[in-house]
Structure formats: structure tokens, C-alpha cells
Image (cartoon, rainbow, N blue to C red; front, side):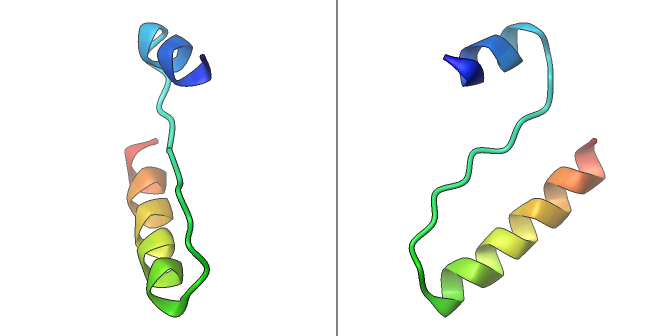
Length: 39
């Protein structure tokens, strides 16, 4: 529901799916950094 509303209102959002291991931590860090640059 929120994802759809954010798209309608053109509000940046970040969907995060996490598996708990070292690689996912690195990927999550990269995603947050990229998202921060967008906003």
C-alpha cells in the first residue's frame, strides 16, 4: 500500500529485503548510500 502511494505522490522510497549475512550488509549499505544521493 505505501509503495503505491509513494509512487503516486512521487515520493522517493527504498524497499529493503534483508537476509542476515555479511554480503547483504554490504549491499544494504550501498543501497542506502544511493538512496541518500537521490533525495
